Length: 333
Ligand SMILES: [Zn+2]
Ligand SMILES: [Zn+2]
Image (cartoon, rainbow, N blue to C red; front, side):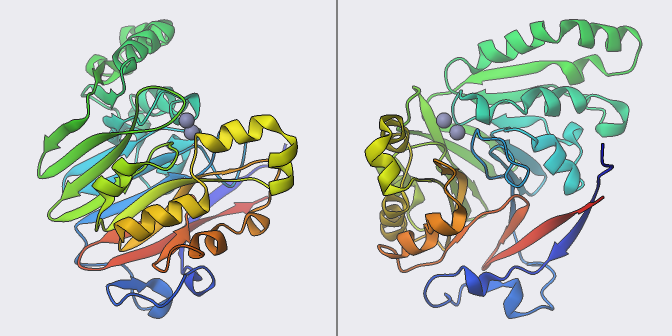
């Protein structure tokens, strides 16, 4: 087996390739000024840890987004590889003890045991407080069931004194729409979206007058327009398929109907006018390549603002301006 080493370095995004329309004066990009090392006035920092779908990909891990605001570190969804991506930005899984789930599909959950349990170990954070999870009805039960599934591991580690018992405890909350979290100036509002599992939520996160909306998995949805109006950063899912595949493959039509096409997302962006819109949870059906999917071109057919296709480890700093930076990783064989 090849030995792989991951190194993290900051790289300047070639946004000129991907931006639509004229640059808004409220947005600065790293490639406009290579001296920009960070947005020093930023109140919030958002990192896309995973931007993929359930499909296996080394480039796009499962959906997960980290939001840092003041003293708070909040994770939204925990898809495949979220703990690894956290490690790449030097955040220990043990530092994460607040997780918000959009819906109970496995591609948004499969990274939970890794963050929760790996985070209890001495070298990976040594969590000493409970791991708290907010999500749709069934979240509380799921966390209790996970505790049962991992009981032999947890019991042994506690017996041997390797972990702090409370660090392996979980607290699950079955949420209703509305404010679900408010602490240290950070407010999290859950709102209903449309997917094939009920309920499914999107989230709006407010801090010091800055705001981020995460769509979750959804078809075109009015609530995103309601909660996304004038938001600093709108993180939206997207799906694409070839027209000929949609004619031939019935199942693809069903999948597309529970997600959002670039034209539909463009309409959402046009009605909300975020400072910046970014795609995550990128679902390309039938081995459609990203250049062929032409997500930005299709979005721009209905939207004249700023939109980009997100990548894993893309980071946004939100203050008076929204700045974006790509953290890249190298594979060294
Ligand atoms: Zn889903
Ligand atoms: Zn999903």
